[in-house]
Image 1 (cartoon, rainbow, N blue to C red):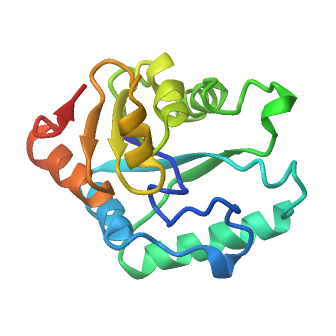
Image 2: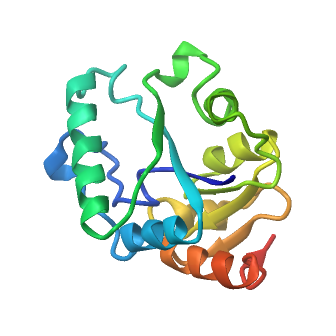
Image 3: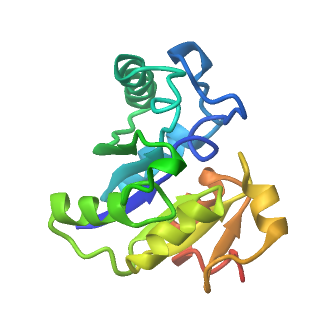
Length: 186
């Protein structure tokens, strides 16, 4: 089984410093859903791993998060894309849980649920913590410059072997063509 793990905010949809708090605020980045459809067509199972501390901060509740994800699923299906699963951490950083990225708890749960080693599986994020969580579990890290990606790239400290792409669509094109060997490696 081929599996890819994507962050949500800043990779699939536009991010906001004020959090995505409603379905109306969830807006896909152009080309991201089509990129997921191309991954599906190439035999990839697409899983999302996303920190959602807005729940702990009481900016939105689980019902609203489910509505946001329903909108994302519906938009994806309109372009022939399928998201196999969404894993999320509802905790704030001060909770010191094991599931909040950069810790690897969500990735470990993905590995258990899908009964697959994550060694070599691509993971795509726009922040250092996204990449660190996957790297701990043996994933190959890809940084996209959407969302917080440009700032993350400028700050440095990326996991070894991280490849950098303008957006998810470019990353997927490279992955499907050449194993992403055309990305900028750090």
